[in-house]
Image (cartoon, rainbow, N blue to C red; front, side, top):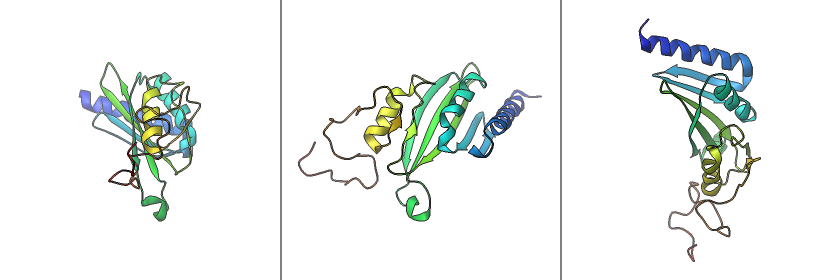
Length: 165
């Protein structure tokens, strides 16, 4: 079997193992081009991250990205999509875990599983206002503590606020 097919087969088996472990909390999943993409309910994100690290060998936390779906709440969707990017080396395999969170809701911190999530969660908190429960030091990372608002939200004024920072 060619290496690409073998890798895809391993990713599909990993997806099956994840679905077997977390059942209905796995909302969608795909394995393609050396990447495993999974959409989960937010309540299982930390156990799923632990599963990826301990049982599937994803040994690096690459990044955390937030998308502001400003109009989605009006259409029945969540305000934010949070994407956790993991990496497995050797082997150069990536995983993308996606959860949705509403405005004013929180997510559990990934720091106990991946220490590298520390600053990424602080950035998401500072720029979008998403709190991470259990984070060891959740405070603003770029803006002053007394700054009001979260500048990467789509409803933040484009010209900024009067009076500057």
